[in-house]
Length: 278
Ligand SMILES: NC(=O)c1ccc[n+]([C@@H]2O[C@H](COP(=O)([O-])OP(=O)(O)OC[C@H]3O[C@@H](n4cnc5c(N)ncnc54)[C@H](OP(=O)(O)O)[C@@H]3O)[C@@H](O)[C@H]2O)c1
Image 1: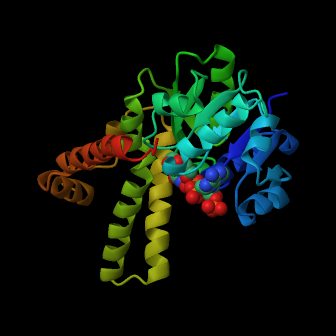
Image 2: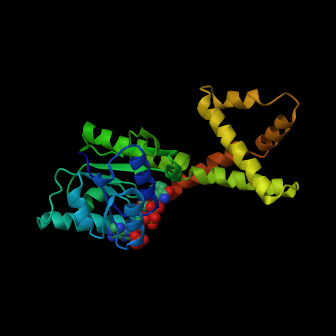
Image 3: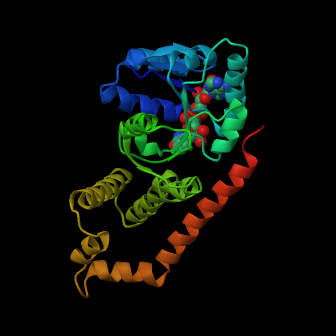
């Protein structure tokens, strides 16, 4: 049986654990490790997973170790595990490491682990919390097909995933999916504000925007036709939608979106240089 340890019991660990348990993974095959007690106890109570404050106990328990701490703690956690291995407290030679940390490379993780262990980098996004996540996965050369399948199952429990051919594409995934829920939130906020300007109350504005966004996303999900076709289907010549879309185009929406996504990529690259403390 695959046993999974989460080192760090924060938002992302919780999101993945919810998905795993819902998809039928036995809670007893999951252990969470976290220094403070509140989040790990809540996970144990809510889902029946095992919990500890001891990262090494969790690492010993599992075949798959999910590094779900903030990027600046990854190095410390990996060095702690590597030291326990050197001191023969645990044996990590057959373990797989999955990192969800933004901006921490496979090479940095392997360096902190003091060996070329199989490492899979995953870039998830927050809709994982509601089972609608979108993740990009990149496997180091040491990862076997079986280990790939396990990590894919893990991430598909909380949404969808794609494999990346190069590690650099993790930054692209950040721009297209990782940071992207916030782009939609920003757009929805702007529409909500404008709805209020038009005289709808806060509750009505929220419902109008929320339901319209949900409906549009469902139409994309349920119709296997290009998104541009969906747009054209609802845009009558000379009509109201066309007037609004023309304004978006005239004001440079496409360039704005491209610039924003490029800004996310540039920031991811900067963070990769800055974040880990080796
Ligand atoms: N949230 C997202 O949308 C998202 C998306 C993509 C990637 N990620 C990545 O996911 C990772 C976790 O993010 P998050 O949002 O889940 O952060 P988070 O909610 O802050 O969770 C991190 C957890 O790690 C614990 N922790 C700190 N030091 C530790 C240590 N030495 N050993 C074990 N646990 C330790 C913290 O415990 P205390 O609270 O007790 O300090 C906290 O519960 C990050 O690397 C982030 O880049 C997150």
